[in-house]
Image (cartoon, rainbow, N blue to C red):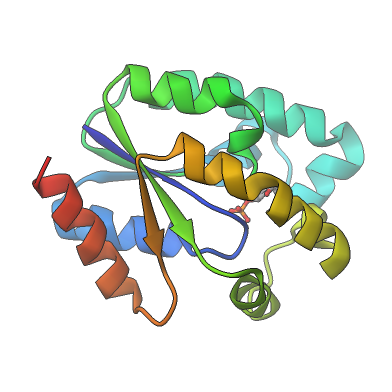
Length: 168
Ligand code: S3P
């Protein structure tokens, strides 16, 4: 059964995903990185500028169909996968458990500030905050488990997820 991590930008999906994969000897796949590789763009800013958000969303739908077929894999999704329910449905259809990494918006902005990854949908705090509020119910409703990441180390978050996985 695969482990799918969802959550807003800055929630640590990739860092936590790598830690889980290492501890469980699972494969690790990062959707953003694979999409940039497939489309040939250096980063999301360049992709958005040339092709717009729609290319990212179409690529996410197509990629989820490929990744869902893998086994024993941790998938770190992009923060916007919940905009297309079919992506989560595809993962779940092929045996996966979906974890939502939750943190208040203020903590996410702190994480983003200390990370140099270009994020075109985090250009202004106001827009990012309304996007966060819009998506919050989607993350909660589409996941199997919500993991509060506040005041926890990467190791602790990874262990919490592994514990839930092992009790299934
Ligand atoms: C996005 C999140 C980003 C990336 C793109 C759009 C979003 O991924 O897919 O910039 O819509 O929230 P991270 O969540 O890994 O930052």
